[in-house]
Length: 407
Image 1 (cartoon, rainbow, N blue to C red):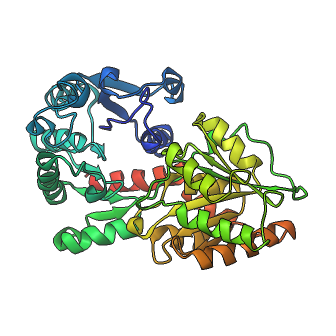
Image 2: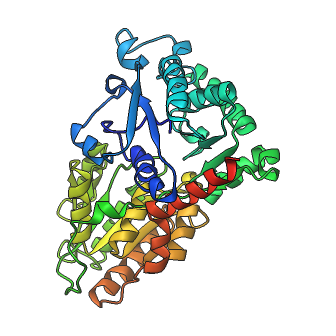
Image 3: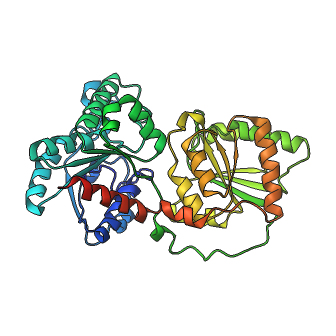
């Protein structure tokens, strides 16, 4: 399993997908060996994350440099050094170590995961040299992950995307929309049955120390929480701010009705000014990042959860959605109505959906949502559907795929 994002990396939630497979594949007859990069290549590390790795998992690390931190002068470096990405130096050492691991452990298949394209380059090389079947995991579409400012990286990643789709035994995606997009670009791979969806999900072990859900009386003000990054393109909170300001001006909602927490939103300076300008200082709080465990407890303690996912990302589903659904709090979702996130929420239930940039629709939907919370008639997710998105279930799908490609 070739994965750049693996503990002790401390970058978002990308390592959780690999960890889920590592944790649950052995029960399906597959023994993972992980090939990652040395910790010096990671922009940030958290030694506590090492505790997430199962004790019986073999983990090997190959030499790698981060071109931005290790090979730049005053933050600048030649663009050709980042082909296909800033960790291309990982490639030769990982291939050499990968060959040793394949022979030492009698490896039967290779799996690699994006968004670090070098992982796919390593897997491609090892598969061509050994003849082993290769499952290439594209989480998000390449076009959404490439650093657009580096033309060398953009062109290189597009070339490697073509190679992966041509040579991988199977290519997996986290959403139906992402797979459809690739089926349109690479129809032969689709016709050959080489494109597969394995959704992201939640890991049940993450929720082991949460309290047992109990019925409780709604409080005043109701506490609404959003956890994670917001940004002007794709997850823009300004229409939501405008809707809140309109409701406050009309006397429909006040700080005595709702207290909104935006946790680790990024761009806090800009959002602070926008909140102040609209007179929402006492209704909206911007809070700094906390650990994933603390964030889950905060979400569990909320009366409802907020989700922002614009139409630009209709073919993606944020990782937090699965955690939201598992926690079981009602969700107020500002999402593209035709996207994969909206489709998942409609299937699972438990969410009120509004267009992300329609101020009037947001205001009307929020008023009804808040009243439903007060009346204890807010929507609830279907537990049996939610269970389909556990990491365990994803590992079952991957194990079946590996059984299929290994002959």
